[in-house]
Image (tube, rainbow, N blue to C red; front, side, top):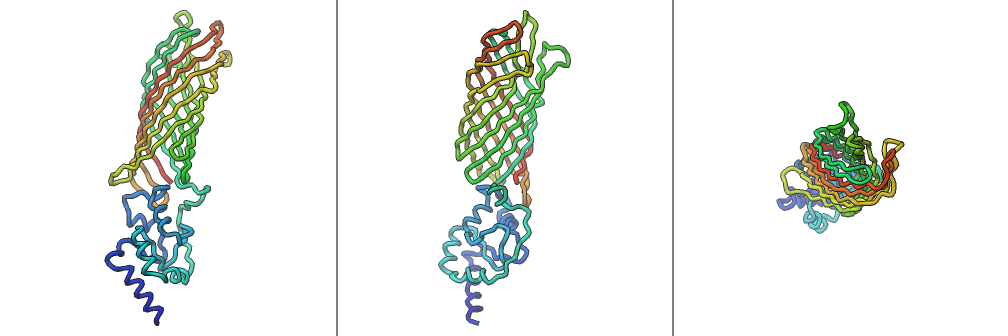
Amino acid sequence: MKKLATQIIVVSLLTGPGLAQDFYVVKSGDVLSRIIQNKYPSERIYGAKGKLAEVKKLNPRILNLNIIYPNQKIYFTPATVAQSEQTIPEEESLVAQAPEVTVEKKRDVSELNQVEEWNISALYGAKYLSLSQSGALGKAEVGVLFLNNLKLNSEFKFDDWSFGFQFDSYKFKYKTLTAGDSQQMYAVNLYGSYGWLLGGLNIEQNPLFRNNNGNIEMTKMTLMSLSVGAKKDIELPTRKPTMLKLKGWLSYPLSASSDNADIKLNSITGYGIHGEVELNRQIFVKDDYSLHATWIGQAGTQRINQRVKWDTSEGESKSNIVNASTSLGILFKF
């Protein structure tokens, strides 16, 4: 009887005016992510800065986010936790007496070696490419706007680490080439980050021209380079979760090759400067994923000096490449 009275006092204290909205008493069949989503419908649930991670830090007794117990109290603010520790010394024993209940939950945030978030996005937009070339292959000036730029991005986020890739593709056709003669260009960026530091390996294809007595010939040059830079993620104070991501990096060329086996490219030097802005805004959220509208803007410039042998043309070739793109698409976060 004394123990029952104590429990009634405990519950009365917790449901007082000061704490009523800052905790939740678990019922049979509850799922932690749904509890948080019902209390914070417009906020991000998953990820290192999501509400699920925040609630876990405030509730260290929750060892497995997939297992919660009837009558267990979930706290949502540090003030509630501090007050509960002073007024509810018997809460641990109440939870310990409850039978273990495994609650069905689709997403286990502890799987895949503690992956906090995985996302994938698909975008479509426009790309502008400007190329100025001089040297052994002759002089060429090209400026083209492409309206068929496709992007596919994916990223795995851990606590402080992240790994991902970016894929970019567009079809290049130079106006003086014969009808139907075009080249599909690709770019792949494999990167990793720790905190604000960013590094990666870039493989990018660009056109390479030869002015042979007024006859313009084109081949595809594949450039491999290392990159190092910085990034910054900013969560904007909007009603729906909105994230602004900024990236900037420098690249150094390692090697170059052509899709034409008779063309030799070597002794490459140069550098590149690149920047990217990404804006994501949540459209809706489910228990195990959320959908976002996304926009990416990119700009960069590269200076490349290399030694080229193309049939009878041999010597140093210099290229200045400037590109800018803008794309819209959708982003899934899991």
